[in-house]
Structure formats: C-alpha cells, structure tokens
Length: 361
Image (cartoon, rainbow, N blue to C red):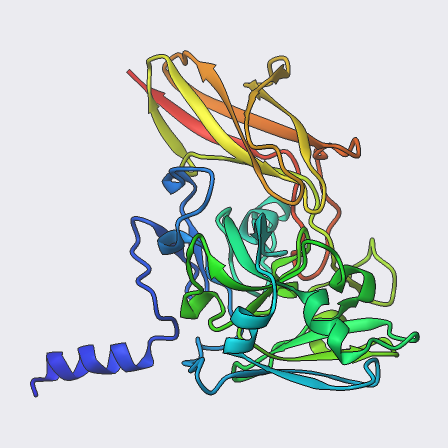
C-alpha cells in the first residue's frame, strides 16, 4: 500500500465520529468530536440529520441493537428491570415530540471575545443547536414497571461510551410527558453519532442532559454527584455561589442565519433566524439596525414549548458596514439581556449579539 493510501486508511480508522462533517455544512471546532451546524445552512424548521450538531465526550461507540439492553436499577426502584431493543418497540406506546437541543457552551468563543479572555472547552461559535422530531418511549413508561419507591429523588441515564457519560435529573423531570428515550430522529432510525440504539431527550435542558447511547438508568433516593454536575456543566466564578451551580434549563437567545461576519448585496432582502427559550416558548422577537429603534420581527409557525421559533424581517440595506441586533422574549417575560455575567467555564452566553454585516454595491 502506498504511503498516501496508508495515511488515508489511518485517518478513517482514527475518526471519532461516523457521519461526514463537510465544511460547507458543519463548523469544525478542532476537537474531532464536536461539530456545529453552519447558521446559514438551516433550510427548514427541523435540522436535517446530516448537519445536526455533534457534541460528545468520547468517540461514537459502535453498538449492536441485537445485543444491547437497558437496565433500570438503583435504590429508588423496588424491582430492577432490563429491556431489550425489541421490547421498546413491541411493548410500549411510541410518542413523537419536536424539541430543540442546545449545548450549554454554545457561543463560548463569542463569550471569550467579549471579555478578551479565552475559555477551556469546545470553542463553539453559534452552531451548537438543532431541532428534530424525536420518536420513542416516554421514560416514565420504562421506569414505572420497576416500581419507583416513595423516596425516589433523582434519575440518572448513563451512556455506553468510553467514559460512561451521565447526568442526573429530578424525578419530576424524568416523569414529564416530553422526557423520552428516543429511538428515531426525523423519521429515521437514530444514527450512531446521535445515540443509537437509544438516547434520552430532556426537553428544554442543556444538551448534556440528553445522554446518548443509554445502557443504564439509575433511580436514586439520594442526590447524585458526578463530574457532569459538580465539575463540568456548572456555573462558577466571582458572580456565582461558592458551591458550583449545576446548569439545567437553557435561557432565551436568538440566532441570525447569516455567516459571522456577513456580506450582503445592496438590494431588498429578508433576514431570517431562530430563537430558543429552553423549557419555555418564544413569544416575541425584535431587531434593530445600527442602534436604530427596536422593531418587531415576524414569527413563523410552529410556536412550541422547548423548541425554537423562526423569525424574519425585510431589509433594504445601504452599502457600508452595519450591525444587526436581535432580542427574543419568552412566555415568562424573560428577554435577552445586553450583557451576561462572567462564569469561568464559559456557559450560557445569551446576550443581544452585535452581528457585523458588510453591504456591497
């Protein structure tokens, strides 16, 4: 084998994810594991699987549904139970929900630029977010046959990847109508990079809670402490309590579907984007150009809880350099702030952004 062919074969063997991640669709963060969607490559309401962002803590495991099983156990259940892949399809009702998943570190690179500092962790731009129709079994339907005890407090899915990624949630969140063990994504069997054979979808929470490649669920009568809620995916820093605060829900934020910076032609056009508010529903989006007055953008259906909404406005720009600013408001009256307090890990950066645009004749 020639040296070039040997190098190509080694690169294929060492690749940490399965699906192609072409630069015209995905933004490479440099980790080999994490790829964001390009904001100017979002064609419809749902994010196509080929460009849905990837965030993993270890390489995508190759799992066989024929030998895979899911174990429900812990001191919070009376009768531990094990399910096969066929059990999930044959013995439980399937439900579908449209939900957005966003990494808590989305926009981390912009956070660092705003403060003139550099964070450790994945250097996300704006693309660590995506929306899909997830189909599967309600997590509560899988927990109830195990006999949840009266003292059960937390539920923790655990992955079958190399590091056994895991993240606990309160029992009430695990029993919610829209907390699923998903088997299908956008009408297709769950792809390997997105959690095949089964993953949890925890609506409105940070992406790290929606554990992929689930093989075990622990139900506990005590609070569960793991690296993913004590050392990482927590808020720490001078403006936060001394004890790390685990991140749960995602705050309201918006996204302009243009490159950063953007180049446009001097002609009438429509500027589009998305807004997301975690567990809540976005009810209004406003925009302004070059520090002008705030104006209402048009919202397009659907308008769902725990899912993003599309917005748009018409603009006839003059040649020159411009700034687009967008702010979203949710059904709890929360609006994107102008600034966000510092935190040492660069999470939950969601202020009004100043999107640079150059308009050329």
